[in-house]
Image (spheres, rainbow, N blue to C red):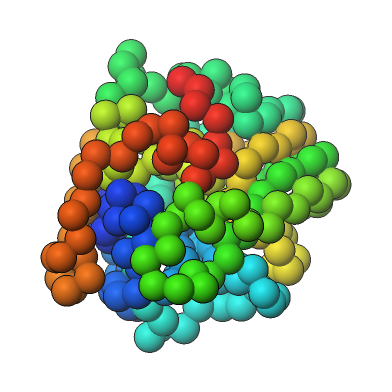
Length: 239
């Protein structure tokens, strides 16, 4: 079904460093042709664009994901935009207002978002792999690699999640970048874009599959503090 979100695991598990087990990339791709996530051991960032999954490790070049690769967390959707628009300019701070026409008068649903544009500036991060078991996402964020690029072509894809989903997903925007030349990308922290083609869809069907692993079953997961989650994800707490 189009414009449903399939999610494997929850952000709260990543916050606690639960990321050695997971599902396969092949399974994730059965549920969606666009998406975002991470790899086993929190080794970098994952983005799915047009049915192809790409891995951005912190210690090497971008590579296509193989079917058997283990994915500890991902959100995927069969993307069919219900809103398409040419946007002369937009930014991380103005994207919410740019997208306001797609909201049906309330803010308690998900959005899937794709922006193909010329980026005058984009700031993104790539999280490093765990150096020891159960190293938390907050700890890894302290040594993440932050890159700033100017004047590149690329595609952003991701989701806007309501505030009540904190701990399941990232409240607000969670976007990943893939450059047009397929050489760089990662978790987007800020951007300024021009001449963009924006597509978005409301998502009302949200399916979460919880891991069936000893690591997940035995972890004493608690509520996630929203500020800690946004610090780990590097996204401002707005809207």
